[in-house]
Length: 151
Image (tube, rainbow, N blue to C red):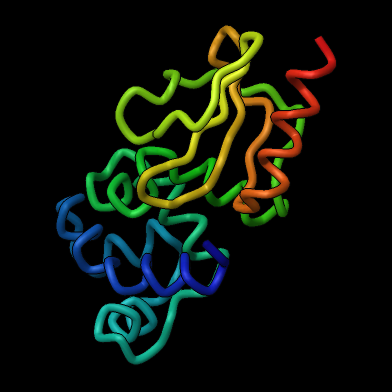
């Protein structure tokens, strides 16, 4: 997933996200920091939201079903992974990936998973802390191999 794909998907779903939250266009525009005119343009598909607006929407409405279904229950992790071009050794507690994650490999207390919706990869430690995240499958598998070899 790329920034452009994320921008496109969130822009296409903005009206649904707003209505799910029960907001008027005026309220939503105020909450996400754009003019009502810009919000209407995005909702009508005439323009795309910018990256900052998309990040705001995903952060503020991360619990919305629409946002959850776009990113497989981890919208902020997806945004962080794309913005930082991967994450390595920054521990964040997870739920272990019971619903949105497919286990690719388990070894020596580490788990390599792939999100079934966003398709990004992550490595969890034995306590379900995320220590690595990337959209690059080859890099993810290499990092998993390094981690499981070094113990």
